Length: 180
Image (cartoon, rainbow, N blue to C red; front, side):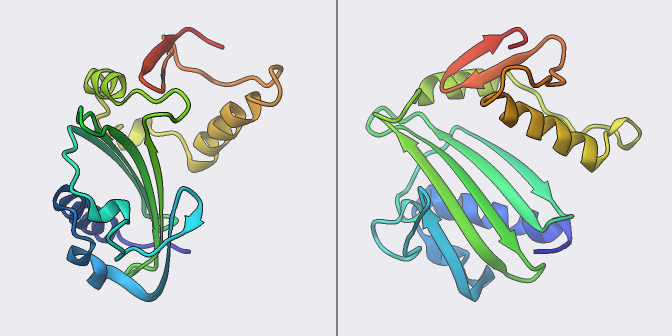
């Protein structure tokens, strides 16, 4: 994994979202390295199989995309509050600037811990994440340290996390307020 252009990540993510909407993974396979790896819920999977989540047409009402050109990686969250079968997907890709080399999909739906696609869609619609002006951006190390502290706190309540003020977090389909 290494640096690449944001345009590569944005183009692939756009193709992926279109493919997911119609349930047709072949719309982006030209971007996949010949020996790419694909997984669903941490298990190796066949991207082109009819059972692959990518080959299920999903009507997403909300998606959030994070592009990391430094690591040539992207993360996309997709919320599908369809009454017939709601989902929340987390899709992470890695690439080399020309092709996607790895795609990992976390599929959550009814019966999964804290699952609530309707609540997730509602609270996500209330958020606004405009780009942070370059002069106001923290360094990569500062952002990584904050993320590491947040995750480490799950195992050690004495870890200090630099929460924002006010602090609101989405857990499942619920908003949690305050510093924990």
